[in-house]
Length: 226
Image (cartoon, one colour):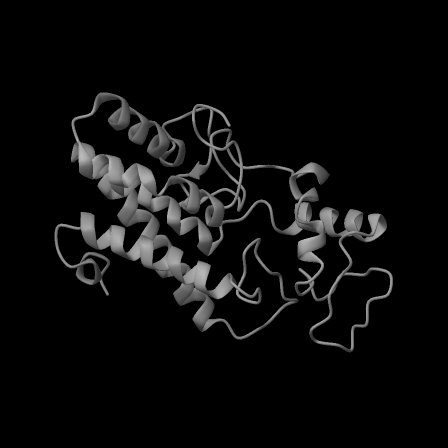
């Protein structure tokens, strides 16, 4: 924890942890401590907090799947994943082209033994090379913090951030839909092939879309030119 916010984690778990702050605003929008906390959290994602450089304004993206009050986790360490090792052994491998002892590549649903130290080292190397410096759909839940700041203040800066981030994801998804080639599959930290991944990703998309609709001065589809 740093400044009352987790230093670096994914937005599945951030979302679970911080739902209550929105209810505090509804209960008493003039409460000084709650208001300042809400604005502090939002600034960790809008680029206004130098201690939390999560936001790339030029690319309109959050700079990693693990992020928080100290910015994106570049690189991740063994300690970051250690708790999850026995759990992740039951999920599909994070990469189709990974080489590890005992892997049967003919099985499209092959798994890796994260508890094996050699395998764990290989997984962590590839995670840091291929996954920790990109935005992921789950990060769309972070827009709720900024939407909350807008509701407290009415400041255009927060409104525009929510709409810009939503627009960026609309453009990315359109580009993916038009793409024909397919490379090796890479699964985000919380991805669609995991038992609960599809629902968690959908939750983030709903949260982002709802935030955009809430702050937009007109229907969000019109605001984004859709």
